[in-house]
Image 1 (tube, rainbow, N blue to C red):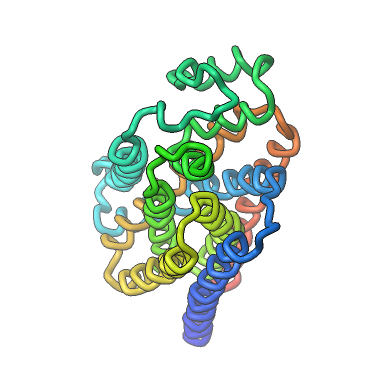
Image 2: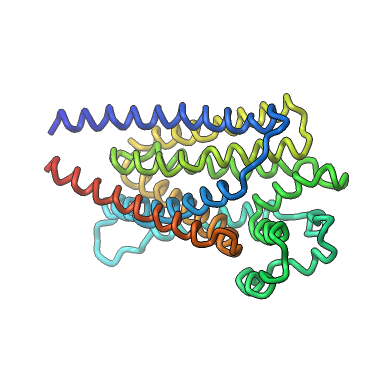
Length: 324
């Protein structure tokens, strides 16, 4: 049993260090491609399918792995029956905090600064009920207008879109890609914490794979935002480097906290669960599935991701059974 525990410790070190290095390099390399390759073009279909797969990964990780782990840690501190569900509260509060940061604190400026020249009545597209909006107008808007609809739902997409039209509209806020980076950076830190704080090998590996799968899309989105905003190459490069550091920083913070006891672990795992559920539900499912293009392929990828995360849960249970 001691040897197995020692082996687990070594495995965790390998997973966390590998994640730190690979995430850093992935963001640095992929984020730099749009800045340094003049003919670089994004593949919207690939990005859309990847986003759908990531949505399935994140909501499954949050609900199936992280939230039960948080509950288990809180129960070690509050074992009495009928105790307040603090793990669920922490999850909801983290969801609420990110909602505030992205939809309230950084959403100012109004819609008039985000018009696309080909749309004459962009104010008509203000989204108050996204489901009703998609059902009503999906037959009237062209494919590129559907992208605008999706971008209006999500703060990160909205800011990225503002940056992409900087050449067409000189009134665009030049800070747009930097605001985008703040939102993405917050996510990256919490994603890193969720990896670093875990002490179960299979769970840590599964979440590292889930996070790593969408890192290239994150770096690509940020690189494109800086390129389309005509941000200085040196400044853009430094911003990409800073973003590349965010995940390793989060992993390091989580790693330090992993030995702090079940209460601290429970709090931060619950926060990570809320973050993952937010990313999946607000930033993927809402906008991706409001657009009919490739909807069956996206739904298939979404479901496949859920099956993948479920398989990790069964592998984890089998591993625990072998150790006993």
